[in-house]
Image (tube, rainbow, N blue to C red):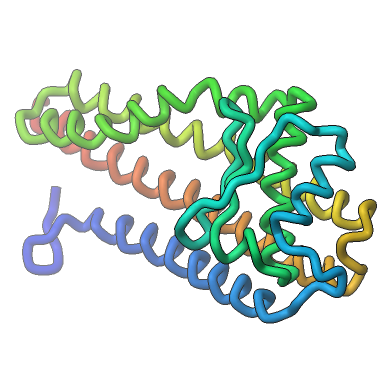
Length: 234
């Protein structure tokens, strides 16, 4: 493979592009969340209180709400039926915090309603974790020693992690859609407030889209580099 830029692999351009896409949408998400974190909901409910009300309105009484450290580390754990809210969400009365809490409630509702994409995502978590940890080491060893089976194995494992990210997209979008609907039907937020919350959840959803784009660019790089191994063997 031809080398450009003082001997650097030209496929590094793909890495830079993937990083730029991720950084842009991450910054946009943080900026949007920060903006609407300054807007308090008229209801005066905290993220935890809003989550409790949403779960009860959905007939879900077996999910525990807990506080978790960190910023925007909010998540729903289906294996333990626990909804964990971060410091910036749990006790905050902002429409951003309530939106994030409602989004996690959306996942709890998905779980209670046996939403198929969520079940599929949960089932492939071990495969995705395995693939994300071993794909690059296997690929690099195969690349260094020009051993195509290892190169191929690395690409296949990376594809497993990519599939997980692709499956995650409809799960996250559906959770946000459920969140906005529940915030409206429960009266936790007014129409004007929901518009701001929608912007927060849309910005969050775009970070998942960016993750898929970044992984696709990395996969393209793997395929290009693997072509170099084939050429050396010919």
